[in-house]
Length: 129
Length: 129
DNA sequence: ATAGGGCTTCCAGTTGCTGGAAGCTCAAGA
DNA sequence: TCTTGAGCTTCCAGCAACTGGAAGCCCTAT
Image (tube, protein in one colour):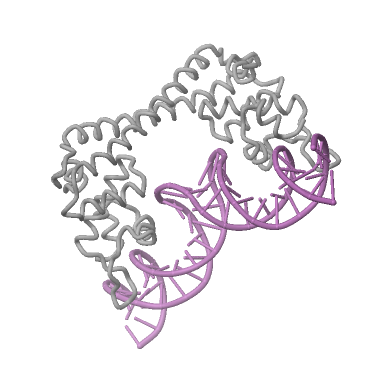
C-alpha cells in the first residue's frame, strides 16, 4: 500500500510517516519503483503511534511502548512505569498551566480594557519582586 | 553591569539574556572590552520578560507586551486582548492535558503492573478504532 | 607569570514535525 | 502516443526557545 492511503488509514500526514521511517519507528518495504510499500503490520504500528502521540507520549516513549508491544516477554509493569511517569509529567504541566491561568485571569479581570493606558497587567509584569 | 550579575538579578541564565539580545528584545551597551554593559532599564526589561515568560507568553507576545509597556499612548484594551488570547490558549491546553490525563489514568489503573505481559494500556493503543 | 573565572562569538542540537523545491512515476484522457 | 496531473521520491530549511560546548579574549589575584 502506498503512503497516501496509509496516511488516510492511520490518520497521520504522509510527512509524519516519512519522518517516522527516518527515525526508525517503522520500516516499510520498497516497491520496484522506489515507492514505500506498507504492510498491514506497518499500518497497525502507525495507528498505534498515532494514538500514543495523542496521549502525549514523547517519540522516545512511543518507541519504548512499541518495543514492549512487540515483545512477548514484556512485563506489564514496564508499560505501567512508562505510563505513570508520563502521567506525572502531565499532572505537573497541568499544575503549571493552572497557576498561569489563575494569575493571568486575575490580571485580566482587573484590567479595564479601555482606551486608557493604565493597566494592571503591565503593572504586574513590571513590578519589583 | 556585566551579564553575570544581571543574570542573577533578573533571574535569567546568561545564555538566555544573550539570546534575548540576539532577537532584539534588549539592547545593552558595550564596554570598551567588548563586554555587555547593562543599564538598570535593561535589567528591568529582562525581569519583565522573565515574568511574562513565566506566565507562558510567547516571545512574540513578550515583544508586544514590552512595546506596549514602553508606549505611553497604549490603550489597556490592547494589553488585555493579548492576555485574553493567551488565556484562551492556556485553557485549551489544560483541556487537552486533562483529556490525556483522564484516559491515561484509567488505563494505568486498569494495568496490573506485574510480571505478566498482558496489559490494557498496550491493548488500548493497539485497538482498532 | 600564571591560573582561574568570566566574558566573547559561533555552531550544533533539542522536539516533532512541516513546507517547499526538484525531479521521478503512474494512470487516464485526447 | 503524448501529455497532463496527481502522487511519489529525496533533501534542505525552518519553527520555538533556548542550551551545550568549543575556542579564545579579558581581568584579577597570587
